[in-house]
Amino acid sequence: MTWLNRWRQLPASDRSLLREALAELSFVALSLRVRPLATRRVRLAAERQGADVQRMSWAVRVAARAVPGAACLAQAVAMQRMLARRGHASTVEFGVAKHHAGLEAHAWLVCDGQIVIGGEQAGAFVPLEAP
Image 1 (spheres, rainbow, N blue to C red):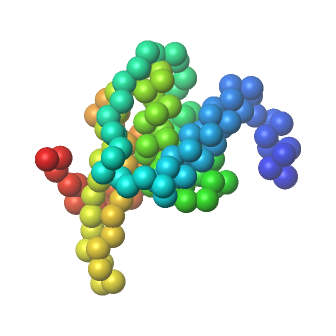
Image 2 (image 1 turned 90 degrees about the vertical axis):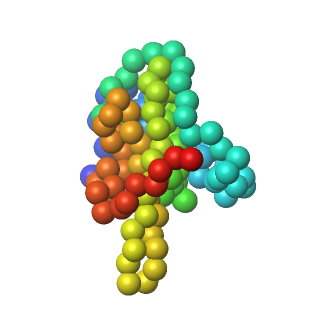
């Protein structure tokens, strides 16, 4: 089945979430290349507008397949922005792991005490403490 056929079979609400996730990921992936990370705020909050957090996570992960540079940090920040629009406060967490080839970093997003994106790998990383 082609992606266009799968797209047409999705409910309108899922297509809308995917469009939003694609826009956010494209913006965040580009801005991560243009501005240094130190200039970004990673804690946001706004008014609640609905939409299930799991469906948003799904939309961001699917959209990430189509956006160059949409690695873990871009996904976490894009989802955080989507959650903030809906009134959910969240925090981007960072961790590091030592491998034979050196250090590896990972970012994930926590909302209401739960990892909502990036959690598949978060357990392999030692979380960094905020200053």
